[in-house]
Image: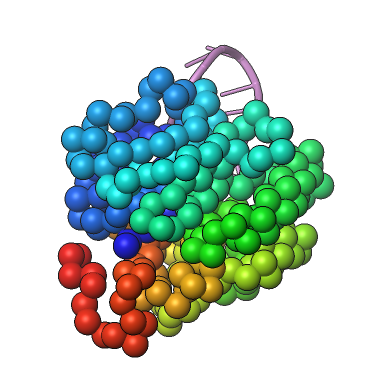
Length: 270
DNA sequence: ATGGTAGAAACTCTA
């Protein structure tokens, strides 16, 4: 199974990019963030025509998440149970025996701001819930826009970003706590190019200058990490006209029945 | 030190 995450920054604007990318990358599941549209305006028919079903939790103007899949989705749940939040940031479903949590972590705006406090409180609630979810579902993937660069390697200039929102120590500590539940940052299971990023500010030609952050992540439970054979950032869509400011990240998982030592190709489609 | 861009919406907020 190929599973991906992509903050599309408006699904209305980015639908052509998404449809092109589905055809090119052939993911089985794509988790979307910042769809920025009301539930009634979700492009269900367009995705169905491409062979994908979807579940979503949208709202007007801001936030909004969706899971798009060509594998049947079951047990859909929106939000963090017991955490009241008007902002649509989480949707979960099960596909092919894998429990999928699609998350859009708050941005936090600036260290010390009200939004930053909301981000840390949100992360605490998210983490407490994930602990239970992981106990219920050993095959768990928690993916999305975390709005946290966990390591110095994940920031184009750690000196510039030290103490700044997206890279501040409390945020990175919150990320480590999530990983500490027993999850793996799948991207780092494999050798990766230097300066691998998933987000580049629209301003100041940051993408062309290759100055970005790695803030979108695919965290896998141990059983899924054992099945993971590749993880990559696809910068292609970020280079298109009128792009999202984020690039998709895609992970390939071997089938559950296959031995982890088996080297036969299961990702034959490019 | 500021502003630079993009999206949605509506003259501003969020990222």
